Length: 225
Image 1 (tube, rainbow, N blue to C red):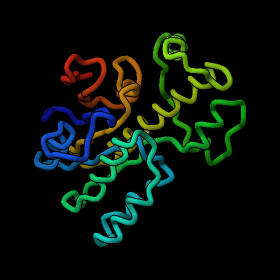
Image 2 (image 1 turned 135 degrees about the vertical axis):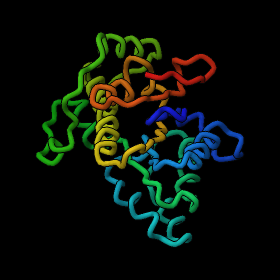
Image 3 (image 1 turned 135 degrees about the horizontal axis):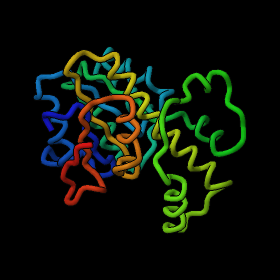
Image 4 (image 1 turned 180 degrees about the horizontal axis):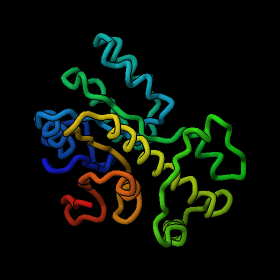
């Protein structure tokens, strides 16, 4: 882990109770590594980035209230863990990144509705889609017996955008970060699969070492991409 600039951890495997939990141990290792680091959250969409940036300037009571007001997307366990980390005063100075694409943008991409000029500006570009991505996506939907509104192509496009949006936020963060900076990312397991997902897109624009704790790794051991 010490050699990786980016470490990914499945958000649903995180828990807020107990310092022996893997996510808590990982966060503590980052805190003690002696290098600047940030934390990325797939549970928080980009419209709330300013609210995240303002947390450090707030006293404890106001910080607690601000954390409660954040709208988080994900399971109850993941949301609880995210809020517990955001409340921690010992992480003062650690930047938190909102990695999720705005919901309105995702909704439009599932249909034929045109994007506004403002939405076009934040639309991620310059990424290659994974080979056979649409077919694999359709097979996953079929295996889970999930009905989809509209075409599979439209919903796949929205999924790709969501992953590419997170990757672009990470890319921009590192391009403006100080040397030796690290990033701890909490994301869904589906977005961490080898050969697709957020690490796949980040690797297209950044030559950084990435470590993934996730579904493609037996026993949740790490896999460097």
